[in-house]
Amino acid sequence: MRQAAPLICTLLLLGPGTVKAQGFNLKAPIATQPTLVTGVGQSADIEMVKVLLNRGKVVFKADPQAKAGALAASGSKSLVLVIGGSSKGLGAAGISAEVDIERAKGLVAEARKLGLKIIGLHVGGEGRRGQMSDKFITGAVPLCDYVIVVATGNKDGLFNQLCAKGKIPLDSVDKIANAGAPLLKAFK
Image 1 (cartoon, rainbow, N blue to C red):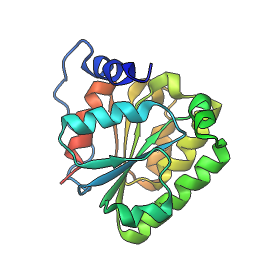
Image 2: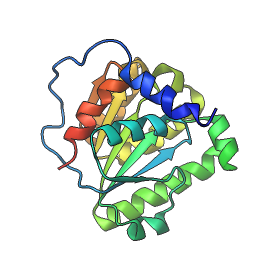
Image 3: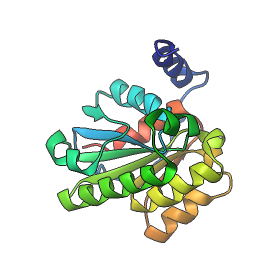
Image 4: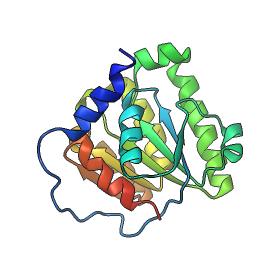
């Protein structure tokens, strides 16, 4: 199954349809390469974001469980948070939701101290919503400088509410494959 994951991610990203021309709410790039990509909630969605970044030739390191102490040593100049809870992912990592939330808060605090920009992505759509994922969403989104969400994950407007409070630019796309365009435009 592990070997099939990259193929499945690629097929999901390529999916049918075309990318529509769209204006984005983030008007100018904010992030610098290389970037560190980590999960908040330990979902497999990080694999799809890695495909998007690879396609766009963004230099990155991925560490689903990155800790604050490793951020400076990584040489990263920005941080990408892939937000979405997975009980299976948390179990495989051997951590609780609360521990992962605290890890993410520490990582973001260190990123702020280092002057890094933070991009949040919720690409799991409606399937990555619910009580558990919402803990990660409400904890992480307000800490971001920019957020991208697959529209079906924002039917209730939660991302709009969280971003409006902090005046965080939010872009919504209709499917995962289309998240690549705004994500790449966020990098200088």
